[in-house]
Length: 476
Image (cartoon, rainbow, N blue to C red):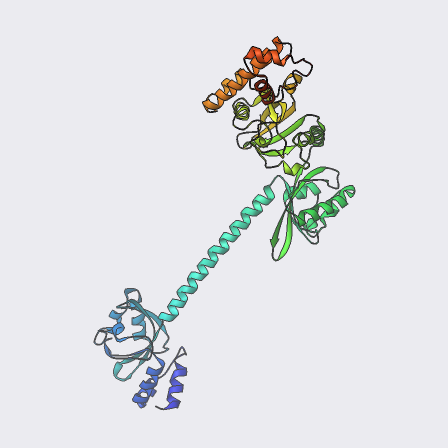
């Protein structure tokens, strides 16, 4: 093969205008070989548009792809949408250009790029390049572009929704850099609260927006919020003196740590009232404890800590109220059921166990409990006020249930438990009556009850009645 001819033809195949007719006529063998080396398919088409001959190049086109083409009209090998391109190729004499034509094949569609050159006696030389690989890449590129456009649109819509929520929030919201404490963004409520525009707030130090008397406390609070998961709230005043409740959430953005600050205005009267109420409950001499709707403790005052013998408030939080109050499965079930049903319980006599006692221990200090429910069905809480039981019940030690409390157990406590409680109640009442009849003479009381003195002493101890006869004389 002539290397000069090969280089010339291979270079010319990339141009829009080619004049290979003279080259093919003068050196047909060498020229055809060069064309085949650079092309994927070459056709010789007669003046009527029939394919006289075809040669497959070194590309990916197989004989099966062009089976039956020889002797067929060139236009009939193309799909209907591309047949007008074949017509243009057959009449393309003055300035030959490349045309994209889709042909039918065994595997579906065969996209080719054609160039048609005139030959002597009205024939034409058609040169094709296989565009399947390029078409596949173009399809992938188009799909990738569509995915990117959809993702970009979703991102724009998401940013628009977030901006709408951010600006329409009633809370004043700031996004600040956790390291520099400078404002990176602020919503409309924040701009109204500070009286500054968006451009003036961006880059402004957050501490400079705070009242001078709260400056140090605010910096300390922001440092604590950055170092821990404590979300607040923290009370602060802005430069105009108005009080706000500040909560913060730590997050990362663009490899930087930032704080989302949410500020709610505080009504000074309501705020002072809540502060005084919380302080009063903490100083209250009677024990007070608050639980959630599952009766797990969320807060308790100092008197309750003293009552159960615990030192820290965090030892209470999360503990079930039944861990300290009531006898499990008995009066506690009645108390909680009545509270759920009526929302209010007054003067319920039960006992309180120390925090170090086992939950199943039925001994403790006699107390009187009043309870109330608050909140809606989605966030209900229960408050328990606990005070020592009246002297008679306190003297009795472990209180027995009343008849009304026993009947309230029906349907909530197994019958054998009710019978056991009833037996204890009747036994206690009989012993108390015998001691009254005998003027607290235990020997006489044992004789009245038909018991031995040792058996009576055992029952007195079990019912906590050991002190009833301290001043009585035992007669042998």
